[in-house]
Amino acid sequence: MKNKKNLFENSIHAIFLILGLITVASVILISLYLIFAGLPAISKIGLKEFLFGSEWASTREDPKFGILPFILTSVYGTSGAIVIGVPIGFFTAVYLAKEARPAVKRVTISAVNLLAGIPSVVYGLVGMLVLVPAIRKAFGIPDGAGLLAAILVLTVMILPSIIKVSLTSLEAVPKEYEDGSLALGASPTETYFRISVPAAKSGITASIVLGVGRGIGEAMAVMMVSGNAPNMPALFRSVRFLTTAVASEMSYSSGLQRQALFSIALVLFLFIMMINAILNYFMKKDKVD
Image (cartoon, rainbow, N blue to C red):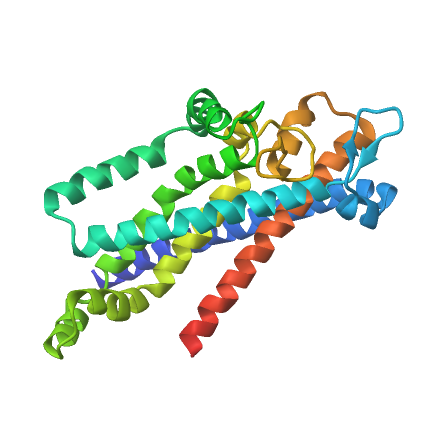
């Protein structure tokens, strides 16, 4: 009986080990493919011209392959969505975890789960038909498709990740922590924000990482509401993100243009890895402190 139990545990351990190795190998293969596919274009165009050039005209007779507008647009768009979405998602999670009535909590969680399951193209369609005309009318501009519309759509799209992960982390905080704080005379609000939130900090930070990943990696929805024009970013100007730059031209690209699109994908991949590494560094630093 003991031998069978050991055999079962060893089998499960081997399965998990194999799955983990497959995951690591997949990341390595993707990294190598993007490196080998993206570096030739960077070497031909020039690293400085590619990263800091302000003009993208890949189909012109004298093509230009500067992706600085795409980089800045992705940074501004994702940062704007995080600045708006993180406070909303965080306070919603605190309310649902600590103050909401069971009926309200149940309905709200169902709505959040529904938001998480909606395809990105639906977000883009609603944004294109409702949000873009509303921005055009509210600000009196010729076209409402631009950076502001993309930020608002991304904000809604990252909310489910932030709310669900933060809520799970807050609910996992032992009740004894809060009981001890209340027994010492702290108010419920002080207890939530000085005891529960710090105890769930790692999970809340993880929710922000997921939100950043969703915001940076989104293509279809932002393509439909941003105008998809390679301009330097401005709030009411049509813009193009790194993801949409690849998606909008890959189907008809060839030669150096196609290689440049792989280079954009490589920059996006490195950008996401850098952000995750920075956030993980601060998470580990907080744990050590």
